[in-house]
Image (cartoon, rainbow, N blue to C red; front, side):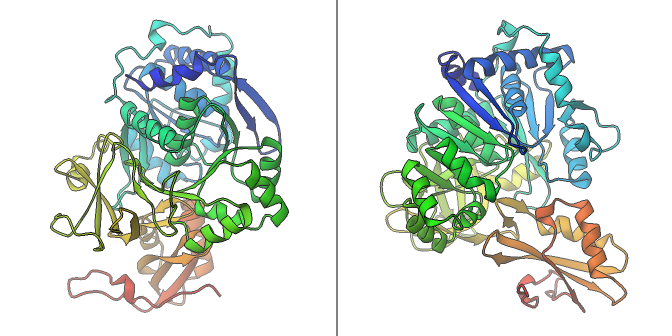
Length: 496
């Protein structure tokens, strides 16, 4: 079965029910029923067919949150087309790699963003697509019914730094998304009566794989906004009265600034706050519970696996832990020989289940490293308590997670090494109370290199969350006898 078989409970079974309210950055609003979404996605699917898109093709989008992304996702599910989300914070260097690797038939974007696409990229104006949709029938035909699409059919290529530093496209199938959504809807008891405030970006699996899918599977109502904005959050909660909110730790830190009376009012209407994409500091969980009257439910997932582990909906949500394996997902904790370690002993987390991706796009080398005997190596180190709760302790790789986004030092280091006067560079993650971690760059260079100018150059080449918080000039990088940089021996940096 394709995802469409699950979505039809809402698209067809709840056609007249209000489904989606969208608020753009300027406060403009639009509303849709599930029947409207069915019609719009049928129309867009026909536009795509007319433009030559066929099953198995890749179609990318480079867009801020908007209803068009829902249309694209549903149309591609119906056609068996593979969606390639591109982070709107990415710049030309990062986008070029994805476009060359995935080879999409086109990138759907806005004219203002198209200038960042590599030369020669075919791009389609999202507004022009919407204009063409108006001339198409909204009826679902056999060609738009996902005929022949199976659980193992790829639905998306989502690019991640993973654990090896090379940007790879994780092949997520219809079955991966379906298993993940079914597990979350059941485990977190999401129903058609919920109201989901969606602030997460839909180019990320947290917003797309979790948020969008539990909304469509449950048939609940969703308010979608372009991005999380701290100064608008209180009004969103007060006006929309959501019951369900998915966020990253940075958002919860920001929400702690909400006045006590407003926080209590928000809490009275809420059913569930969920946090993921980066570790949630235990003090934030405690402070949030005191202010809002809710214990945030922390869970753990990856681009390649969607959700793996969650604190329970009923029962103890233990501070500092990610909880217990989700239904259909098995988790092992192993040593360097891949042998299971006893509870209370640190080791690498391995994951297996229908949520785990089918592999990496055109990267058999990466697959051989990441998959062992049917288990996916997460690269994360953790420990399991005697009663099964898992606590993450760090990562085997040097991956940095800042505000829920993956940052691999090597990418930044390679860019720095290209700059005049830079002999070598090392990037490390340092703790940050708001973002979890931020990157800091240590550069070997003479006084002739203007570090402020270097920072300005990097800002034009990388997404904002990848730009180092500071650039530290050092005479050399500490290395082992074999030449490996010893990052832990770099001088400590603290914000001034």
